[in-house]
Length: 300
Image (cartoon, rainbow, N blue to C red):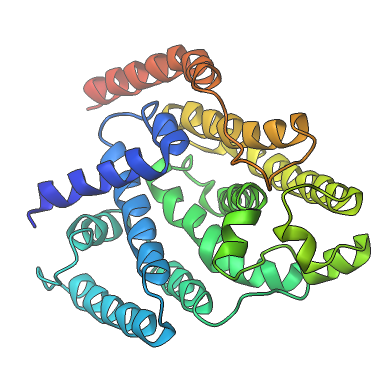
């Protein structure tokens, strides 16, 4: 796999599996997009390894192999055998992405091999620290915090990852249950009087509806904290992040509009709604991109 081919594969993975996220990336300057795709492609590729085998031992061996090959590639080996690794490794090196975030992500992927329930929200946050918050902080150097605001921008980036992940958990309750996993904290199920069997029914019980409404409010709290950091980014990255928040937050809107029924059909945001959000941010993105390019040309 050539480096160009690796970036293109990551772009295709993003376009196919993260369509809302992919649409938002089109608001970024062209030079940033391949690097965002590389980070998404690696995360998706690893997640597919975790979910693609029926035997836990096979999944563990596959994840061990990927981790070993990634270590070699990050150390300078041009091989590896995994088509997403050349693009991912170059992006990591180019932006000085923290290897600790990568290790945290891989630890959470490994947890999916053996952990299928989380007793408390704090326990779930421990998992999401790697599966979601670390993705947000890996993206941060590509999105470019303003000079001197890097540390201040880190927490909103974490919160953005948590917001997106919790939105996915709420949308995918039935899908995750089919894989034997429940990401809703067990203490929350108990507090609202929801049994695990209720998650496998076609219709919502009143108690489950209340539980899901509570979790939607919790997710919105993460979005609020995340949006506080948008103005800490370089202007050309802000429209992408704002659009991504609206697109993913739109899933929560659809969950609420449907009476919180996430068991019958997969909740989605309509194509018309997505395009309206994209169009609303397009002018700002174009102006910011042109302004930054003019400033670069004028720089001594």
